[in-house]
View 1 (tube, rainbow, N blue to C red):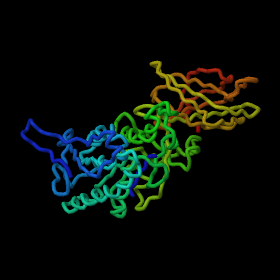
View 2: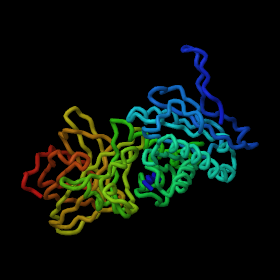
View 3: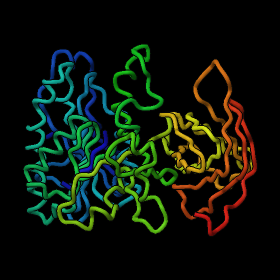
View 4: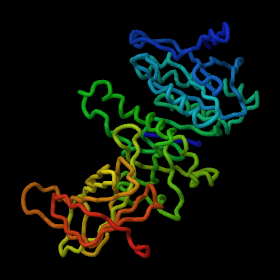
Length: 417
């Protein structure tokens, strides 16, 4: 869903220092979407000098644009109702809060507003040509392609790709939000890249049913710009392998760091070391509401049942203040064999720094028939999100099926593997 590729109008008129007119994003009606609109591209510049009042710029009027700094183009997509993107202002302000740069909003709402998707998509190459002409002038004034960054949403991602192709892949960076197939040097797949938690599952959810999953990519990117949420992704061949804990080596001590979702994705060492890095898929899970962060733990269980047991584990953590967070590891049954360690990937919505109590529930999923016991020789909890934290252990437990067992963990012996 999220892709990362390393791969005109009104001019702001100033009457006086206290009487300034600020241009705004084009706002159209549903009527305009029905009758259709002709293409018009408006470039609106924001910098730390004009955080809230945009300057309309073009190839001859640069305003506050400083070509020696990074320039980030934000390109929206299909607008079936004509309204401005609700996330645009937040994204602009968040980008400027993390880096002193030029942010240019590419307003092509007159062209994107239509109820017929193909009509909007047919205009994307024309928008790309407008941007190419503008960037060419930036280069004349001393800008560098390495300092050009494009963030495209939906059809805006297509536009960004077209611009990148016009420069033979020499743009500094492209982030495309809203496509399933792998296209970039690194492609991020939240929750497998399909249905997103917290989004309506049926048409009864109204308009959110149609746009929530698609729009989630933007809000996940936004979360990467906030200090309280760092979303880690795990390079993997498939979502299933990730969920089964087969692709989290990058989160282990003494290993190379994992890629981060969003703005800081290009800090990942694995592909920065290479001139032409290979394509990589990265998977991760999210919570169902902002800021969407998930905290990963491994739950290592060694059992001593004589017979094989298959089932799922629910684990709940509680800190000293009584805060709790729970993870149901039930995407597929785990197989517990005598003296064999099973490592389960648990995902929690909260990060509890000091765990005071742990509870476990074992279930085979059966509602009738006998209840089984899971005899645990050792259970160990280790944080992937914070590998520096010491792992917690407990020994000699017996879990009755569908019955919560609560215990206080102890620090694992340092020599224990």
